[in-house]
Amino acid sequence: MKQVEDSEILSKFSVEKTQNEAFNLLLQKYQQKIYWHIRRLVIDHDDADDLVQETFVKVWKNLHNFRSDSQLYTWIYRIATNESITFLNKKKNRNNISLDEVNSELAETLSSSSYFDGDKIQRKLQEAVLTLPEKQRIIFNMKYFDDMKYEEISEVLGTSVGALKASFHIAVKKIETILLNED
Image (cartoon, rainbow, N blue to C red; front, side):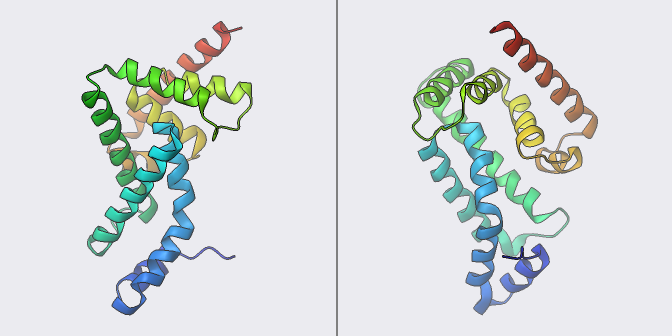
């Protein structure tokens, strides 16, 4: 199936009778990417599913305000990232635990999840990624797993490209160190 251009989706969304069709096209194009982006941040499948729904509800409610000064998918990624960060912060505050404890809990979820079908190396990589500070983890996931360009990540996170490159480099070094020390 041919991918629909964002401009076509936005055009259809601007007409009331084709809004549902436009939104379905948007879901077909971005839902899976957004799911995996969120899933790598929150780890748990059910939490990721809930956050994907919340993300796309916000997209639906605010798409008419989209100004096209950024790309549609970076705008959606920004919403998904913010929803994920808010969720993790609420989890931390609700349980009155530190971010390190949240990351440890996420690593346990990863180990016991029936939805994780990766091999031992993939699991080790995911566990190493979970040791990173939140912003480095998000940057690493977007660059490494989502294959986003620094300029796109910059749009999503509102951070300079130079700072992103430095954060990614530091994250890679930390992960390398963890993986090399595990053997």
